[in-house]
Length: 358
Image (cartoon, rainbow, N blue to C red; front, side):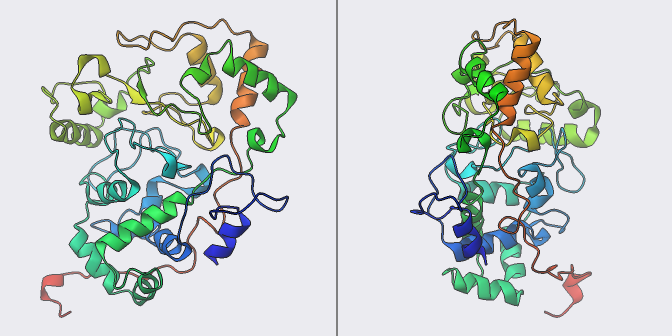
């Protein structure tokens, strides 16, 4: 089933675009269909979290281009996150992940971090492996995927395979169906607006950290659940005086260089119409407000990128720029190729498990 949907979507390596196939902006990645299908089932399975309260899809929902529509995302039971859930669209083409770029090896490592991190899914992968082994469907799917019996490594590789299939398709900017307003907006985007300085290439990002002066989200420190997660993260990343900090330091947690404070990786502009609210902390609600923010030259910050200056856009130019930004979104991912609905898993936690025979 998954292979057929991939073929229909032109997501298999080597397929040539035809009138019946999706128009994709990026060359398809080489993906084993059986491994991707296994990864899709794992992506929607709450067994991958310690208390079975969360799955990957809890914060990355297909109908929202794999975001969650919240300013600040969920976290594991007892906590709440201090950042906005980023889209997974085209994530297989990135070289670094998370808003601060902390993860930068491969999607296998990203999957491990998300599953095991205490404020994410808080899963001991040895327990996860045993849970998967007890599911006859997983036993069959791991075998079909070439992984043998269910294992931690196989699960991470399968998730990686599924994530690589999440590719934008049929956006007007790619199909040549942009409106006249969007075409004018593209000229502003590449010219007067200077947007393409950072939002370049087929994914519309330079994958580099920048400070644009986005204001801090006070909910991070007003909410004890979010603040505790923020403190835990800052402490783990070696940030000094973390108990008294009231700002998200961004890429500084990697570099510990003053000039990188409050810098965040440039987000892709693909699928923007699905991914509101915007910025790393959800502080901007609509695309219209995003345009206004950059028209004003961004926010106030001593480390703000010097390229950001007031643009003086006319209302008509803002409207055209907005039309272009909207043309960067393609078809919804809320389709069978990306949503697991074959079963409800039927998994139940074993209460008082120490006294229950295996």
